[in-house]
Every structure is written in structure tokens, then in C-alpha cells.
Length: 265
Image (cartoon, rainbow, N blue to C red; front, top):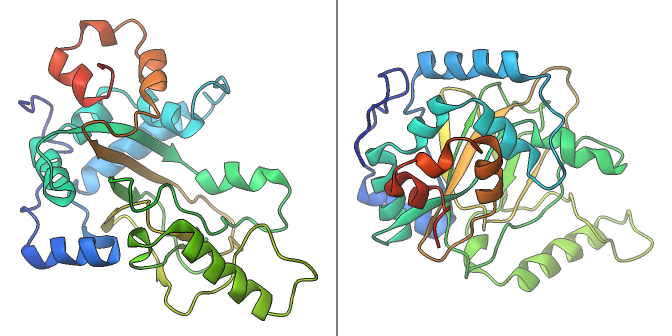
């Protein structure tokens, strides 16, 4: 796909090295310098400021996906860049990918509306060893120790979900805080990596890796923008949101673009 957009968000990174690819396969993540640059992040930040009041999305669609797509052509072209697609193919070891999920905003704020005592995301995995996916995630704010940094359990994307869950629950029980077997877990795992993401860096990872967050104790924003590439036959979670936000446009897109956004069978 030819990239015809402006230079604002054109990526500047080289292709991944063999050692980076190996680290991704083994641990489930790598960190790279933000490939989009400061000017691109500023443009996305400005778009977010003007769109922040547009939050009355139907429950039929993922709210964070709608916020991502409302930024418009800028983010579409950003994630369609051939270099990014080639990186995704490298990491997924396949010859065709599509964008099956995307999001922009403060996921922590949405998840924490269920009455939990803290603004914190519990341990979970968005798929197991059978779900091949790679996500590019960039923070627009500093996710420091008081701003609920992402916590990742390296290598857990290769393990059975039931096995990892039992490990976490046993650690929870060992903490001495529970009368009964807990249904969710926030416990510190001895092998976890706390990622204090900020706009200088981009996390390239598989959400099939078990992950949680620290507790948000500070005031201020905790935004991130991200999207997931899947191989042929993979998830198309946000295809409906794409059709909704671009209801008057998507059918006139090229077949190549429709396919890349998971809109074609």
C-alpha cells in the first residue's frame, strides 16, 4: 500500500533487528524509540483536545476505538504505513495482516468504573498462546509510578492461561489478605516488569502476555494510543466501529484499505 499522507507521522525507524524479534518471541514485548516523532504526537494531542467532549458512543462499539477513529485520516494513515505493516508481518511470521483492534484515551478510567477500590487494572490476558497479535502502544502522558504504569509478565503469552491464573491466585492467597479464593488479582509477581511508558518510547508487544497496572495515585491524564495487527483469520473486534465512524466513507475506500481494516471477509 502506497503511503500518501503528510510527513508529520511518517515513521523514521529502521526494521527490527534479529535480537529484537527474538526478544519479542521469548518475552512478548520490546521497547523502541517512538517512531512517529514529537510533531505527530502533538498533532494527535490537539485532535484529542478538540474531540474530548465527543464521548456519547453507543455501547455497541468500543469507546476507545471510537475515540481513536475520530482523530480521522491522520491515524488511519499512521497505522497503514508499509514499514509498520512489514514489522507486524515480521513479528507474526506471516505474509498478510489486518488491524483488528485500536484504541485511544484512558482505558484505566473506563475499567475502574466497576466499583473497585483503586484506579487499577487487574491481571488478565487478551488471548492465550493460540492468539497471534502484535500491538503498537505509545503514551501521550508519562505513565510513571504514581500514574498506573503497565505491568507485564514476560513469556506468559507462551503459557496456558489456566496455568498462569493459578500462579497468580496462589500468590494472592499467600499474601494473607483473603478469606476466600479471590476472583481478580492485583498481586505483585516476582517476574513482572513495570513499564513506565512515556511519549519517547513505543511498546511493541502481544496483549496475549498477561498484564495489569499499578495504582493511579496522582492527578492528571494517563492516555495512550495503540492498535493491534492480526494475521489472516485473526480478530476483527473493531470493524463495526470503523464502519460506524466512517459510515459515509468506508465503502468508497480502496479494497486494499478495507481489507487492512478487517472490513472484508
